[in-house]
Every structure is written in C-alpha cells, then in structure tokens.
Image (cartoon, rainbow, N blue to C red; front, side, top):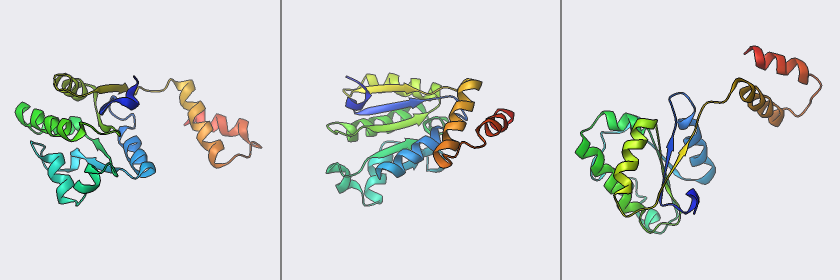
Length: 167
C-alpha cells in the first residue's frame, strides 16, 4: 500500500525547499485546514483536537468533511519537552485513526524522524515522503515549465531560458 492509504503522512525536507508553500497550496486546492505550528501556541496533549473544537471544525472532522495539513513540526518540537511532543503526536494519532483521508505533517528531517519513531509505536499507518533540492538543470527545467504554464508563447524561449539560467 502506498502513502495514499496511510492515516498519517510525514513530509520531510531540509530548510528552504518549499514545505510550507507546498502545504499551503495543497490546503488551498483541497479545502483542507492549514495549521502552522511555528505560529501557534506550544503543542501538547490536546493541540489538534482542541484546535478543531475551538475552530468549530470537530463535527466536520468526525464526518470526514475536512482534513488538516500541519506545518512546522520542527519548530514545534524545539519549543516543548519530549513528553509534550509525544502527547501532541498521540493526539494526532487518536484523531487520524479510522479516517480515509490522511493527516499530513510537514517538517525538517530530524523532527520527522523523531515523529516517525513515536508514531510507528502506535497502531497507525504512517508513510514518510522526502523532498530534496533540484539539481541545477532540473531547477531551470522546472522554472521554464512554470513560465510556459503562464505564458505558452515560445517566441523568446531561448532568451528566457538563458535569463532563468542566470537567475
């Protein structure tokens, strides 16, 4: 079974790769809730469940009409004790059980590894997806593809590619 069948998906990447941008884009495209732990109160036992209740989303959550993408796992981990972090993960596990749509957490590699260790000890299916940096050639290809998506005119394609390479 692939990540789509897991109850929790951990997205791991080094800093400045675009985890937050990806999380916000997925949340916008799917109508999911985006939670940035870097900007929230310190995490603990009822962070997710209490947040869903406070935001009047708990009944939608239970009916599987909404999902959540949790960003900033690494920032959250740095601000709390090991027990508080594990209590937060236990809250996520409890809410993720039995859901058909996964709960997705984004963070840097160290925090994701620590979360994976704690989550695999629980009775929940967990997948880890890793994001890395593009090679220089792939970066240019990606930027050029994005440009073509917005401006399909290829009249100045050679000059535009050179400009992208210079950037």
